[in-house]
Length: 213
Length: 279
Image (tube, rainbow over the protein chains, first blue to last red):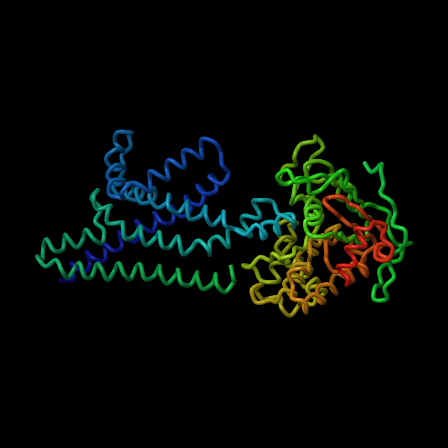
């Protein structure tokens, strides 16, 4: 592999990282919002969200990405590939994150909530100051799990023409006729990215144990 | 609002030497908590039946009774953690849980009335993600809008009072049960409540840790705090109370000053209860 192949691999890795990163960031926040709306049990809205979650969890990423990219023009939208890719990944991961957040909320200690209410905190202050900081720590292992699933599933966005870390290996071997080296490097890069997440996960678990949460 | 008054306790109740509560002449006649015709059922079982109780400012009222008698439920109704089916509760003249129009209070309004009470729980319920100091400053800062500096100064005073100053930076998971409960007391006091509610504050403690928590509560009674205490500690109840209330199957069957209650109870049931718990 020459310098330009390395450069292409790094570009591919960067594409994977930023597109997944944006999707993860939006998916974690949107998942929390959906969890909260579901906990409020607003009629109709709740049923719509349940439908969305079961659809999004049941649809393969490749299919979802294709569907979004190809159907957008029908709705009069012209989506650029990256936007369509991010949308597909976000719609997918949000559904899983919503369930993680919802279970963290439901399993939250009633005693601690009562203690907060008893000091005169409103439900909103209780959520923001007492529940959310702890839910972030207790949900992090599950969320990070979902993040690494998403990154490992992200090559699906190649189907709409995004050159990510997996797709780029194809391009390199098309020129060099040596498929093995770029694939090996890609594997190592994926491992490095996931490794960072696992390390974060361990930090969170250690903190949760120390606080006996 | 308070047209009907409960019978006055017969004696002063200040009979034990270790107690230095204010004498009767200093005691206010204002009502801190007024409970009227309170009833509550869980799944068809009546837990409270038409309970009336008044707590005067500066008084310590202990609620005794066997488990399942409704005493914790009664206490938890006072700050609306439990919603009664009927009846009314006023904190310092302000009705809790129901607004002037007779409708359920909006959460913000309810929170404001709750803030006038402080509660200490059997299982401490400290917030594990905050250290001791921040457990105490959290509500004053985010409910009362106090500045961080002001809240911390107050918190340090209160931690000093309960003997927990050296642990201000520790996290709850590193504390013993007695230490946790003393922090929980400081946390409740930090809101400067008009009445303190204690729900079996020593029941979850190892026997050797009970004393340190009871000592703190005794100090508070000596300082004139209004308190309602659910407890199984008979000697403590006798020493600290101005009024003792005995609950049986959701009914108040005996209400007296501690001297009368412990030596000359009028109901057979109370005499039985005392024999079993003191013997």
